[in-house]
Image (cartoon, helix red, strand yellow):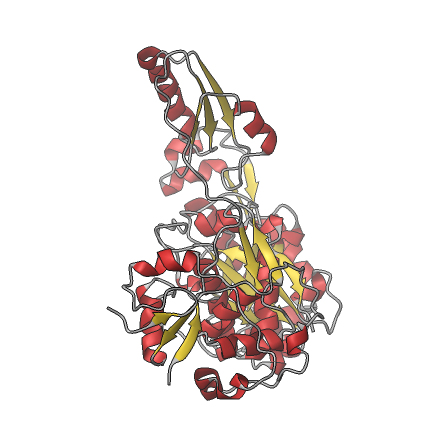
Length: 93
Length: 414
């Protein structure tokens, strides 16, 4: 006798998420930076912004801070960085 | 090489590594429409289904339900295995368990569990929006079978998961956090007695199949449906033993107080679950006084310790109060509300006290004279009557992370 058993997993709804294609150059680019509201992110992003501007010619950094580290980025905040050429999103600690 | 076969795809024997790839396309969804849970709806195929509890043997061999008219077809991929041991090995190998053995979720067993809860496979229990997971009754039933539940536990499992899917519970954040916490499930009402839940000796640990497997069902759902696998979505640094299972019944019969669910708005006599995302329970002991305030000062000291050593932020705390302490409160005429109001006043620390526990660098970032309370208001404290008849041992259960996740109470569908 055999048993027919069911897969316990559930797939995500909708289309699979994909990484955006890399930029050919950061020179003159606008970079969005989403701070995940963890205690060290602001300072880390200060350094990252400085490096992006000084060493890679980034024209503008749009920095926003999530109101809550444990919840998704609010839609209006996403819209504010949606025009950027690239977005850095803080995750974890 | 395993000897099991996937049946709704290519039937060739497969290597373990192939499993993940195949399952993604292996759905044969015949109940495609997602319907909200009503608690009363039954799929047409199951209206004449069997509702009586299954024995373990019946669940394992599926013999009774195999001939039941209208066994539903499922969205989940099906695998064929030789026996229960091979089924367990399949699930262990794929990381589909918590490490403990599972009961094989056969089609027949899952059908019986759905029938017991009057749910169709595609009925949606809740949604976790961050991971875009629709938590269907089918997947919940699979988790409950795997956990070792009886079918009649299903309404409790379903209600607990519905509670965790409410926005204020913050299911994604609390599941993913490094501050490893666990859902603490408190069951009230007649269903506790009907399914043999434990509320007395060893109340927070092993004593009852129902307590153990209901809590485990939730964990298996988190692992498999949300992807809460340690090191993947679950980023807990330590976690705690309650992540295996953490479910208690309130001892309503031996308590002078209103049940927790009634205090939280559920009509008396209605079964309900309350779920709170908590850190590990901290046991306290005070057997040397008959003064309610002195008893509560011990609980409050544990809260203050948590505020200083773990998290200073206010939120839902839970107390589990044993009979020996309840008798002291009852003799003094103290209600749960009296307890909440007293704790609200005394459970607080000054920010500067962080210096005494090695948190000097952060203590001075803001006003060190600021008083932090453990509770936003007395209502933030959940008081649960449970525990063995002897011993002045209670417990505080701290929130995962302040008010980021709040307790949710949901009635259990009949």
